[in-house]
Amino acid sequence: MNTTESYSAVILDLDGVLTDTRNLHYDAWKQTFDEYLRNYGQGPFSQKEYEQYVDGKPRSQGILDFLIFRGIPITSSELQKLGQRKNEIYLSELDHQGVVVFSDALRALRKWRDKGVPLAVVSSSKNTTKILDRLRIRNYFEVEMNALIGEEMHLEGKPSADFFLEAAKRLNKKPDECIVVEDAVAGIQAGNAGNFASVIGVARPGQTGGKELSEAGADFVVTGLEEIFDLKPNIIKSWRNFAQFIDGKEMALFLDFDGTLSEIVPDHHDAQMVEEIRPVLTRISDSIKVAIISGRDRKDVKARVGIDGLFYAGCHGYDISGPGCFHFQIEEAEEASSEMNEAIKQIESHADKYPGLSIERKKYFTAIHYRNVDSSLHQSLKNEINDLVKSFKKLEVRRGKMVFDLAPKLKWNKGEAVKKLCEVLDMAPGKTVAVYIGDDLTDEDVFCELHSWGIGIKVGIESMAGTCSDYSLRTPSEVATFLNKIEQNFTQQEKQWRRGA
Image 1 (cartoon, rainbow, N blue to C red):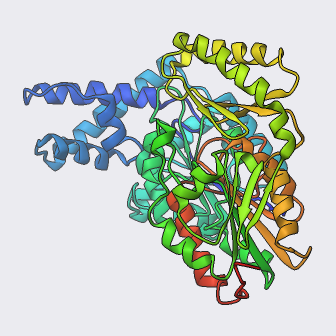
Image 2 (cartoon, helix red, strand yellow):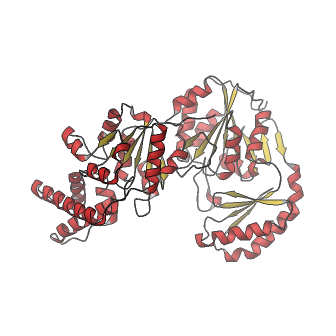
Image 3 (cartoon, one colour):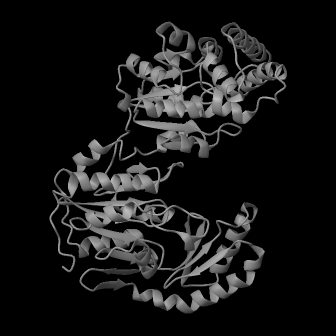
């Protein structure tokens, strides 16, 4: 399935997203607050407090929220003086240090302009127009929403969605036609409050981290604006398009396990299926054909899912079982077993150099987990494994998330396994839709296989450059939400199928 972009307009924050002025704001706030806090015998203003209580908010609201946190009362006249003092320091630093637009932001603005995508800039600053003019980027925006306009219209600042909703209105767009791009927690919260098509967090070095932006509700977290062009629409927010594509057809669900049905954990032995998934997946499997396709051994993943009557494909599809005593495996993989055993011995002999390394022997594969290995050793480990495999004719290395898989050198992967299962399930082209959900590099083989005739959904909030998936979901918990929507909207339409057939 080929999806189009899930938005027709973009609303961008200014400081920290487009311009490198965030540090100027922080420095001005720090000087202002530190002077004030000394009068109360309190410690200095911190970067964390800036991110939590001030960043992205109108000036007065930021002052109030921070001082309430510190337990310091303030009069309206003092509030005004503090705001004026901060602005004086900021403007002085602005004239002294200057301001620049991030190079990736400028390239993204040009791409959107060339595509004819209308843009709006939103800022809690009263100096927005001055900054845009100084940077000569004001002409990129059809709409500018700043603190002065907000005061005139009596709009609430972030985390309220007022500024963003007004920007969408002035663009003649509905919220679900726009994406919001923000670098502050309050801005992410505002975007979610407005029910926009997508809320994207920008985590630049020295700014609010991706973890905080994700926890605040960002659909994706990027480190630069050009990554936005690679993102895929969230399938829950794009439910109407998904439902139209299904449009009365039968459906088969194929799901990865780690990172999709379970959270990623430091030790792969501890992975458990997200509890709310099991009951809904059990109910769905009564009327929709379901298969679990994992890099784990088949018996391992079947035990962790614990639902009878499903198809289970282990070792990336080399070993498949299902209802009616169905069993399929790639016999040629056995021919690589002696080389696999020798390779494992050699890796184990060097394992002490990589504290935290975990070697997991499977029926056909060997997984070398390095999630707990110091990052400074990753490249050395990669080089050593690649050099090792060169001496074996029947083995190859496959990359996953924080794992190297030693695999038989055969033309077989998860994509081939899905094709095989589609044959077994008698999926008629044009009448049945295959839906695959996965999070790893190894799942790309399925996404690419389904690109023209099925639906691929990638789980994660990171950059999706190069993915063949059509849609996205943020977390395994969102996978549960998606499965619940499948049950509510499609299971009554699906035919009851005999698991033993």
